[in-house]
Length: 257
Image (cartoon, rainbow, N blue to C red):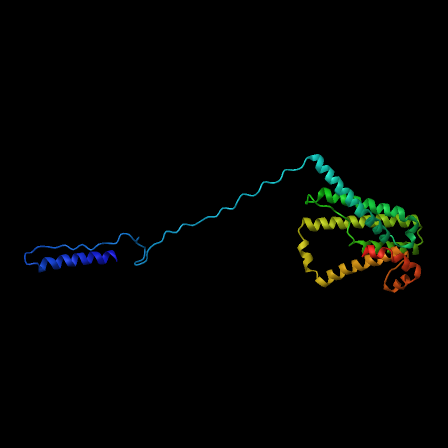
């Protein structure tokens, strides 16, 4: 019960007993007070002692010790050998696709070597300056369309102007190298200025169509290399439908699939 009510009851009972007693003997009635329940801030509501429980996360596991330097060197060398064994045939095919015009055919071994050297420079720069310590770079096939088109356009235009083959080779190799270097500088500036987020404004069908055409172009170029014929579009696909060329296409088919 409330403390105020208990006090009033005690006072009233003391006064009434004094006035009603004949011998003027006072009686005092003490009401027992409940002291077991804690008093709350609002009347009639007991308080509760609540304690917040803080759960602490376990400490992170210790990082594994680094292997010795000799072991890391051996593992890195093995990764490099495996990557070179996988990438080297791809780079040779890239060189053949880029310089597929008949004008470059007598000089194709030298041009393929230049393509392999450029891929080595790309690999070295990517492994050295990449922010990912485990990065293993490789030349992508996204630029084959432009490089092949540029080399063919240079061969056609310079041949019409009467330039000889040495001038054509110098113009093609230096021109493609300069364009590739400018593209690398542009990509570096885009990343440095944090402008890569603007690429998302490109429509998805445009990006999807470009990637699909890259796959079509690489597949068509691979068929042309295996059959030993020059194919520039769908109109040239009937050239593959000969007995000899189909025979050349059949053995690599199951392995490529």
